[in-house]
Length: 255
Image (cartoon, rainbow, N blue to C red; front, side):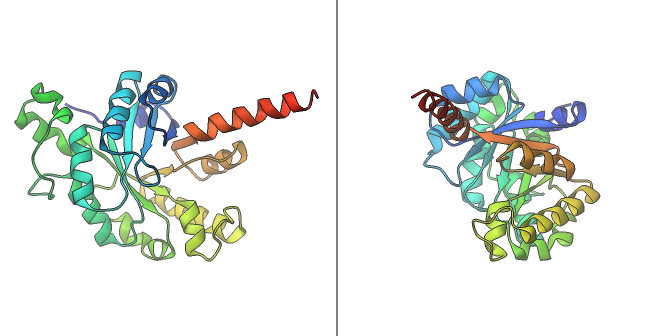
């Protein structure tokens, strides 16, 4: 029986560690995939195209990590080609109602449970997995994550968490802050309390809690304290710039 890589990781580890990718070079992806448990490939806030997505998914699997793609919007037209590329999961941004959560799940499932169109390619090993076998496994093959990142989403959280087929919930703190009138103030008490409230309800519901990116060790410690198990630790660009700034600060201090 097929088991999704995210489910396997969650079954054997208390915390599953990932990295956020926005660069275009799959070599970075492959290198990081040999160190992290999963790779979050961001299609929402980057200049990546479909070819880039495919390259990152292949590189993730080559490096031994699970792959998950955040699509730009909860739209089945955008989701369908991504699923056919064979990622292990999909993140749906800005889910605000139970109906929108149901739509996200439906986009990942074939009829009669969903509306996904038939056309597997890489996701079925180009035919190594038979059509019938892939169809049978397809629901398990896609780890489905929704993002709560608005005041409306928080208000409807109870109903959203009742939706069957949602595997994990990711808190989008930055857009949530904007929705609460605190744009750019990620550590404002109101935002922190709201995130903690969401986290508590998600954990109590039995769904897996995920974050989109950790900005510091203090930040990550807080996420862990809230019960987050899928921990997206940093980004490829963020780590590169942090290391560059540290070295430059040291060298300039020698002048």
